[in-house]
Length: 355
Image (cartoon, rainbow, N blue to C red; front, side, top):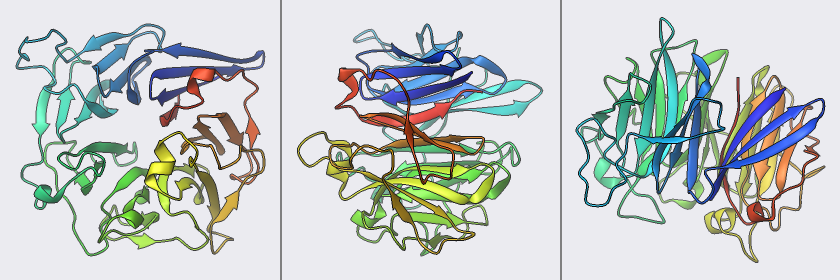
């Protein structure tokens, strides 16, 4: 059985796929669900970040949820060991050794909290005030603020944690979060929506960006082979330049699938001009990206997709359904599932497969 979780604007979607068919469940309905992570040392434990209701935890693989780390009573002060924000924009769980895990939580405004006791208590790791240039960070729809957008960790380089700020760039720790730096060169991207390292090559980083719509930014897709010290751009073949979704083939580091749109507004807002599409590349044989449509819904009316991968198979989720490709992203097949009407106008934020 393969299990998936997808965060949407107003619900967490759980999908179980087995030989008997595919089942879909909706959890945390009515919440603005943004991010989700699974504990690598306890597969039944999940953490889910919402933009409006703080952080939630499940100990039964998503069937039941409880709020943790944030106060919800009006006029009640935060405790010293709370997450002092209710807008949770990113969450990950890292294996710190000896079957122990730590939960990292990113927020808006940009800050980073950690729990070393499975969410019973949290402490502030950093608000990034020491990072040069923080005064220039901004999130375009809310330019007075910014947030932690994405975490990337890799079991083959366990002390390294990469994260991105929307919009502020690339931040890195090489000592499990004790210290953070922002490697800055003329090549450093600004608005990295998804950043992933290849599971077998932690030095290889891949990012999909909104930089094409920012002054001074890079473009749609960037990669690094030296842990983010330097970056190269690969945009040949990409017509629609606002990048948002990304996955890499775990069995082939040259095979990448991305989701893009013609504008940020059309990517995220459902209406007459909603538009997004999918590109794939296998750099071992291709010199440019290929836009793919076989088996997918029309780009017109499709909100930007979230993408994941497992054992060489790519999966995408958007407002029209869930699709998979087992040939490197060229041809796609829809999950045989009754798609809820309530999701047809909702944006998919994060898509993961459970271990």
